[in-house]
Length: 187
Image: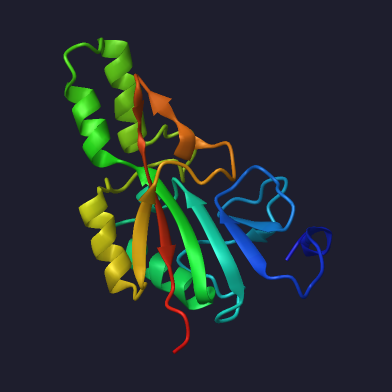
């Protein structure tokens, strides 16, 4: 784990930022690409770098849409649940397919604006990992969350942690589905 020493004391709870770019004190960054600031290079479908129940919080903004609905999303959520401590929380943000569909069909948008909405649906394709394989709504992501064994979820407007796409408002509409998901406490 490159850079782990600069993140604070070893006995501090792990806070894992999946797919992050912005460094923040006490947070470790996991990403599929070896970029500056990345502490652990790997996929969110395999969190074997972290032992069971060792992570207090996970933040994953605009990550799950890059995974297939066949097995990858479920595997990633099961891994996140596995590494979270009892009572730990997952802060999860995905493009809200319901909002994006309504925006795309809005007759007030011109072709350039529709193109921007389409890119939020399907990814920018700037590199091999910047492709969206699935669209998610509250109902769909809720299904995956339930089957990964989480105790519950709650929608929020903002997490107030990182400046990223989870905060994006496009043409007057917040485009992200932001959820706090929690692992059951012991007992």
